[in-house]
Amino acid sequence: PLINFILKMKKIISSLLFFTLVSCGVKKQVAKDPFIGVYEITVFDVDQIGDIPLTLTLNKSNTEYTSTIEGRAEAADSEYAWEVSSTSIENDIINIEAFVASYDVYFELSIDGDEISGSLMGMYDVEGTRVNTP
Image (cartoon, rainbow, N blue to C red; front, side):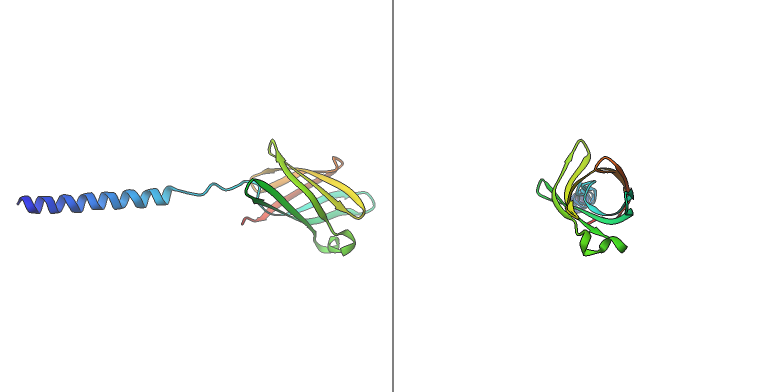
């Protein structure tokens, strides 16, 4: 009887240990960075151009953010190739400095869930949606 009791206790303790480890593994999740992702954005009512559809990709390497901007549809013309010079995030505001069509420009953007909004040069409204999260 004592041996049976010890064997049953061993099984119970082994089962409890197993379920504890499994539940800890299920509960552990990697914290997602709320900024990284691919966004389809539009810059509205740009003088002599109209609306500009763009794809913005935000990445993070260690503690440094990087971004790329590509035109969509008619904005994909190589004449309007975007070169991003810097990307930073301060107080939940994404600051992107870039060069396009011989102009230095900057974006100030904020993210609310999957929605992104802000301005280009403080003059043109920008709105968009996250379409992919790495």
